Length: 80
Image (cartoon, rainbow, N blue to C red; front, side, top):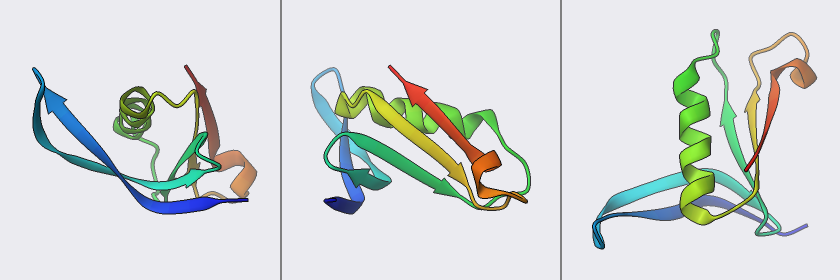
């Protein structure tokens, strides 16, 4: 599988560039992965990955928190 790390996502406002976001991983140019290791899940993490998905027009994203007893419990899938 082709994986890119720290993928630069340009952000524009009214057609003018204002900065960049950086997604942790992009898999097969289809799925955005945002990786965390936090005690508490925060809604700002969901807003972050949804913003990345909208800006890149990717349909699927995974938010993965490695600070869970079981990693499978720390995975949240997003679909636009």
